Image (cartoon, rainbow, N blue to C red; front, top):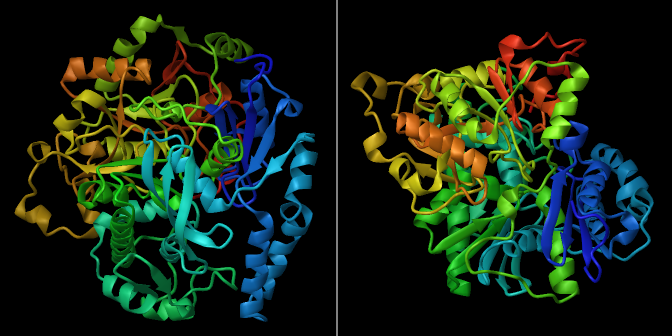
Amino acid sequence: MDMGKNIGSVNILGISAYYHDSAACLVRDGEIIAAAQEERFTRKKHDHRFPSHAIAYCLSEGGLKAQDLDYVAFYDKPLIKFERLLETYLTYAPIGFKSFLMAMPLWLKQKLFMRDTIAREMDYEGPILFPEHHESHAASAFFPSPFNDAAILTLDGVGEWATSSMGVGHGNRVELLSEIHFPHSLGLLYSAFTYYTGFKVNSGEYKVMGLAPYGEPKYVDTILNELVDLKEDGSFKLNMKYFNYCAGLTMTNRRFDKLFGGPPRKPESRLTQREMDLARSVQVVTEEIMLRMTRTLFKETQLPNLCLAGGVALNCVGNGRILREGPFEDLWIQPAAGDAGGALGAAMIAWHHYLDKPRALDGHKDLQKASRLGPEFTDEQIAAFISEYNLPAKKLPREKIPSEIAALIEAGKVIGWFQGRMEYGPRALGSRSIIGDPRNREMQSVMNLKIKYRESFRPFAPTVIEEHASEVFDIDRSSPYMLLVAPVREERRIPMTDEQKKLFGIEKLNVVRSDVPAITHVDYSARLQTVNREENDLYYDTINAFRERTGCPVIINTSFNVRGEPIVCTPQDAYTCFMRTEMDYLIMGSYLFDKVDQPPLKDDIDWQKEFELD
């Protein structure tokens, strides 16, 4: 921690708030010092409230008080967003009066007077800047990237008016060249199918992506003929007669129900083949739009590199196809691609555009610091927690941790891994992870049902040692942020029998598809993270110790939380999650906890009621 404001340095705080995934980010002299989502501190998933806790953390990490800040940057323009809300209401009035009334109190109390809200909440009197929403996304994609020049594509639900934008980044400037405007939105199209298939909007979209390989693309023609007027250049318009999000409280309407043969699936009810086919169909259409947009962007810019941000940029299947089939040589995706990343983008806009400061690139590494930008807890702090609750734990020397954990993984144990600074963005990247053996045939269902308490179809992601990645996956580059899907190599696959080929839908789940079955999805793909020693030495050494024992350079890596819960932040969060699940061990700093030795969790609430299902 850097105590005291650096003499002559410029400290900028970026904030995103009041839509979903509020966050804060501190940038000092162009360097990202700290960033975190509010949900990690409040334990309320996708917390949209003013990010007071995330701001307090960022200031503490930078050794600052609010008065020491030179600028605060908010990630969009609230007045223009309010104009969209009013104009949309007037277009559809009197329909939508109920949703308009529901939105008003928050706008009139906080959103509309954002400058006053920030000043009051932070006790801050300095300058406040308001870049545009998609400008913040574009800045978050380009400025931390390793490229001096790149094309930029941002895709999400909606900002002020824009729902996607194409642009370019050169040096210390981003420029948006074209936009698609609300209500026509790829993010909202995907969210409509998320809602219709019975999952939670702004939370369950990745489930639709995970469900897609179980289905057939039966509804692609219906989507392209009825819902989406898609042009060759990737621009599109939605047929709004099927959607309800402009005026109502749902994403879709009765016409949509009629088109797809029934009402939306009730959340938590049984998944049928229809949902799988719908998921596959909207995924196919989304990938096609992403590919067409990137081809157009390349044609217009002729730049070899592409940067992506916005919630749709978390669609790692689409990203994988852009990399394999698209015209760009290289790709960089903001790890906090959704609205949380807007906080980082806003701070970067202030530094590079407002203050006209250059970027410090080395031509090789990005500036995101492996996205490990959240709170860290020392062994002393962990020891104090252990002492306070009188918990049994064994302290291991640093050099013994890799071999001991590797042996436990090989023995089929599931381990909570709590090390270093917490990740910024939705993916666990080896700081707040649950890890296990990918060779174990039962591991996918065990971890889904007994540890994550979530749907059995959900795939698990692998972490692989960077230099060994191409031995297991068909990939020729690093994927440090788990934002690319790549196929498992042909020689590692296990061919399906004639009987297995006849299986349909969810029946495919338990077919063993490769020699790393727990991380091989039904279409032989995996959403992989690569790790190198420079960026995360302890995690790397542990996977390498597992490789030396087994010949396998891969482990399962899933986020350290249960379904509906934000990723754990503190030792207390980690220990509680460990005790609520059937995890076998927890390694927190140097301290190893064996589940067998632990006393029962006292006075624990019914956490399944505490965390809303996602």
